[in-house]
Length: 69
Picture: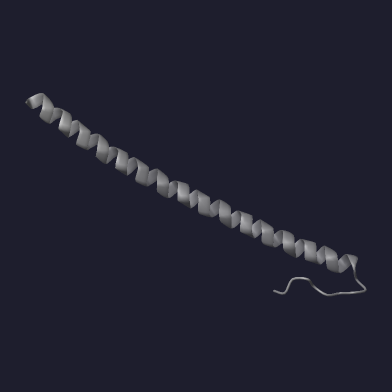
């Protein structure tokens, strides 16, 4: 009977530890995911601005931006 109670205590301890571990790492994972998404968006915006500036310089006789900011 005491061994069964001891096993239940260990099971509860491991379940709580696993829940805390997964919560910590899932928060860190989603923070990293959001950070990478922000980097992709920023790099895409910078690429569009640079490409638009190159387009304006290259076609200087018809200066019209293709992107309206």
